[in-house]
Length: 114
Length: 115
Image (cartoon, rainbow over all chains, first blue to last red; front, side, top):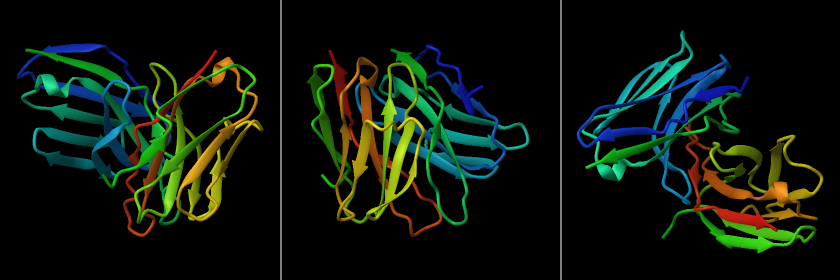
């Protein structure tokens, strides 16, 4: 079993829909949680990060972390065709005051059609 | 542009050849990471540096792989005697290890094809 599980999709929604993307993980030491967006043949671009449990909102994007269930989510409101990309969840454990490697899910491919 | 840069962007090589990739991190970042990403998968950690010190290496980093960051600025990743299984996107990321949140910023990647 991989440490981070993510449904690869593909997910196809109409413009304006609310999109829900999710990841589960097995390592209870993970404290930092991130969502990256990756366009085809490009490097991942950081969207949001959260520390420990809770919600964080940034414009049309909301990230949620439920550490008790080892479950994180990203919601996209009023989705746009420009949101079409692969969304990667990533997480890291805390080693003292530093962060090392990121553990990624395999990514969910999202298409928003006009 | 002050982001992470990687060169070359694409590399095609024959099996058995050696290849070297370069990464230039964001200038004030003291941490540099290498990841590998294959089609349909998320990036997998290979190694990282804080300044010039290589602090961690994944077991994915076989003896054919070597990474350096001699002056704590740019880094190189060399693959010797390439195999077809080395075909992947090689991603570099950097961060600043001086604040609580060490957000990693990625470069555009180097796509390697081994024939």
